[in-house]
Structures are given as structure tokens and as C-alpha cells.
Image (cartoon, rainbow over the protein chains, first blue to last red):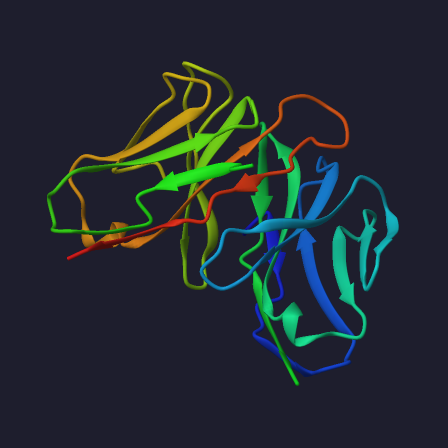
Length: 110
Length: 116
């Protein structure tokens, strides 16, 4: 069983929709939780990170962590075609490394 | 501000050939990593380094070697390439220590390798 499981997708939504991306994890020692966004043929880039349970907002993006359920989510409000990308959850530390989910590919259609 | 730079960006090899991928970072980061990314399999860690002169195995190290002779550079070598090593390779770096930046990875743009 993988330490981090990510909803596989792919996900296709109309412009303006609310998007929910989700990951579960099994390692209760994880202390930080991150979401990376990866555009086609580019490297991943950090979108959001959090260290605690609860919600963190940044513009149209909200990261939610529930440590008791070992569940994290990324919500995108008013989704735009420019949000079309692969989203990777990551968490750690794990012996100096982050553990990644497999990614969810999102397409937002105009 | 270059960040993490990978060379080459594309390469085609024949089975059995060798090659080296170079990663350079200008952020004075202690940690550096090599990942491979295959469709449906996410990012898999090949090798990593926690400082100059150190290397360690990740989850898929077989068939690869690495060296970190200088803090800013991390080299990934394939001694005898196999078709199973056809992939996109990403280098990443991160700061050492605790605090808000722990774990944040800065990635290069990737190196696309095809082994025929």
C-alpha cells in the first residue's frame, strides 16, 4: 500500500466550476502538506503548503488538512482554463524527503 | 534568476549506451534530488543528496548512479541504458532545516530521455 494515495482523475470541468482534489495518507508522522502544480512539459511548482489541520486560503485556492482522518484536499473556486494542469499532493518529512501522490490531471473547459 | 537548470533537455540513446544528466542550482540549497516521472506513476525518487559529497538511494535507484562533488551540482548517470529507463527526469533542490521552507522543492524543467 502506498503511503500517499491521490484521486487519479482525470478531471474535466467547465469554466467557473469548483474543483476538489484529494489525497489520503497513512503515515501519521507527516507534518507538512503541500500541493504542486505541473503544467504540460514543465516541472512541478509549489502552489500551497500547510503545517496544521484546518484551512489555508490563497486567492481562489484553499488547502484543507484533516490530520485525524489523514486526508487533505485542494479546492479551486471559479476555475479558469489556466488552471488546467496536473496537481500533485506531497507531504513529509520522510527521512529528509517528501512523498508524492501520483497526480490528478485537471482540464477546465472554456 | 536561473533556479534549477537541467541539461540536456532531450536525449535519445541506444540500449547499452551511457550518459550523464547534469543539474545545477544557484540557490545555495543543501538538498538535491533526482526523480523520474512516468505516465500514471507520479514522481519516483531515484537518488538524493543531503549535502556536498553525500548521496543516498531513493525508491528506484537500480541502473543509476549519482555524484555531488560540488554543492551546486548533482549528476545522474546511466551506465548502460535500457528501454525501461525511457522517462522524464526531474532534478529538484530544497533548503535544509526547519521552518516554513522545510520540504519545499524547486524543480528543473525536466530532461526527456528515450532509450531505443
